[in-house]
Amino acid sequence: DSGVTQTPKHLITATGQRVTLRCSPRSGDLSVYWYQQSLDQGLQFLIQYYNGEERAKGNILERFSAQQFPDLHSELNLSSLELGDSALYFCASSVVGSRHNEQFFGPGTRLTVL
Amino acid sequence: GENVEQHPSTLSVQEGDSAVIKCTYSDSASNYFPWYKQELGKGPQLIIDIRSNVGEKKDQRIAVTLNKTAKHFSLHITETQPEDSAVYFCAASITGNQFYFGTGTSLTVIP
Image 1 (cartoon, each protein chain N blue to C red):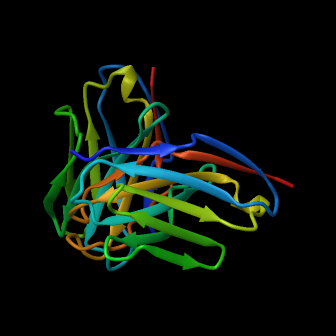
Image 2 (tube, rainbow over the protein chains, first blue to last red):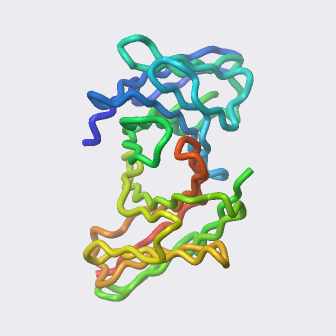
């Protein structure tokens, strides 16, 4: 158990809908990262937050947004969902955000868009 | 941006044999190279990492080598055991924030 929690574990929704994925980092970790894992593209970095502020941005679509709250949990919002958004979404956390610190991954949320 | 390629995509070895997974990267500015193991139904877990000022690092049965000139790095697992069966990912990072992952290698250790 990495100490990172993600909810829900599974999510099934329809195209055009909006969902919110939630992540609680390990106690003491200030940095949260979001990744998308699909069968054909592996693990893709989406976005990073450090202590409430956006720190780095990857291949995140404009339909996706994220935020980190004062209690350091983070939410990833996916809107206008398409079939191709079906994937595993992982959250990871680390102590700091600008050095090479180990990222601890949560168990993931499996999103299925029908 | 950085591009990481990983080979092979699948690998089967007999228990006790060695397994080698290779990755190449494109951006010479990358300076941190972690390896992750992902078991079924779980998130990736860091197993070993190497920084660009080091050529080799070992941790029990696992070792990683880095060739900065050729821009490639490899994971070596010796004396493989059935519990080593998993998907392994390499990654490269410049800033420590954004990681670029390889596409993964599914390792099967046959008892």
